[in-house]
Length: 54
Image 1 (cartoon, rainbow, N blue to C red):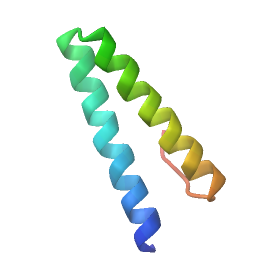
Image 2 (cartoon, helix red, strand yellow):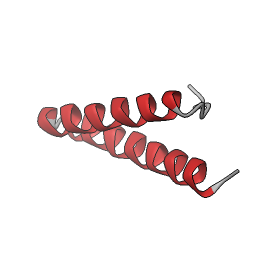
Image 3 (cartoon, rainbow, N blue to C red):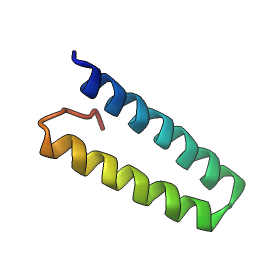
Image 4 (cartoon, rainbow, N blue to C red):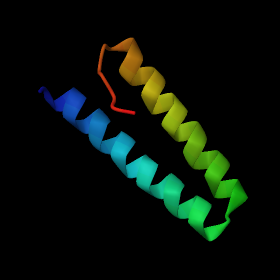
């Protein structure tokens, strides 16, 4: 795995964690921010052929 792929997957995992935390805390604004970031990261992964587990 190259550095780009590893870094991207790490950012996705961190964002998923942050999204879960925001949902648990009931922070609707932060949920929207984190969901947008996650969508962008997943789109970037798809564009570069990086497989992201569901």
